[in-house]
Image (cartoon, rainbow, N blue to C red; front, side):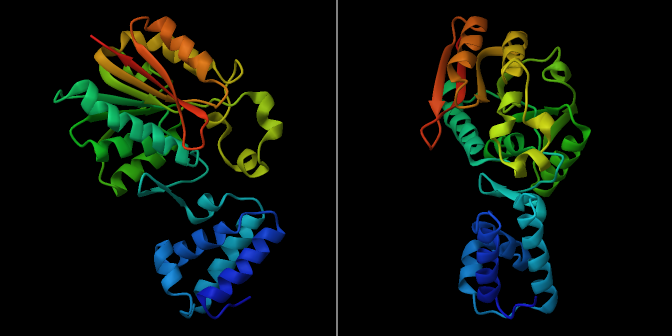
Length: 285
C-alpha cells in the first residue's frame, strides 16, 4: 500500500489499528517518527506528499504494532519529562506516572537542602529516564545510576550521551554498587508487579517488555523491603527517598520505610489519576 499524503496514511492507519484492537493514537506517533516531526508539525502538514519510501516504512511500522509490538519499540523512542529517550526490549518503556516522581523530587530539593551540594542515586535505572531527567533538571547534583542488566545500562548510557547528561552508571543489584558511599537522595522505580497479576495484563506488555523490570516476589514487595533494609546505611541527614509503587502497595511500602526510618516523614502521594503511586521519605537531621 502506498499513500500519497500524510492525512490519507493517518486515516488508513487509525482504522487499521482500531480493527486490530490497538489505540489509534499510535498512528500519529509513527508518523511523527517517519517525518522527524512534532505532533504540531504533523497536523500542520496533513496535505504534504509522502515519498514511496516513507509510505512503505509507515505501513510496515503500523503493521508491526498491530501485530503486538509496543509502538515505542517500533519507533525506538518514548517521550519522558519533555525529552526523547531511546527504548528497546532491554528496558521498560517510561510511563507518565514516573514523571511525577521526578517532579515531586525536584520540588522537594530546595525545601529540604537549600544550597547544599547533593549526591543522588537512581536504583534500577532501566532506560535512564529518572537519573538523566534529574541531572538535566538539577545540573549541580551528582547522579549515580545502577541496574542489574548490562543491556539496560547500555541503553541508558546511549540516552545519557544523546542528551548530554553526566551520569555515573554502575552494574549491580540494588544498593550493592553504592556500598561505602553516602547519598542525599535515592530514587527507585523497581519491579513491583506480583506474578499472579500477569493474567490481567496486556499481552503487548507481557510479550515484549522485560519481565525482570516488571515482576517481583512477595506479591511485588520484595525489592521495597530490601531497599528499606539497605538504605539506612547509605543515607545522609537530611536526605530524601522517593519511590514509585503499585497503586495497591502504598500503605505496605510506607510501613517498611517508617519501620526503617522511625524519625522520618513518610508520605504516600497520588498520581494525576488519583491513585496512590509515590512514596516520599524525608529524613530530617
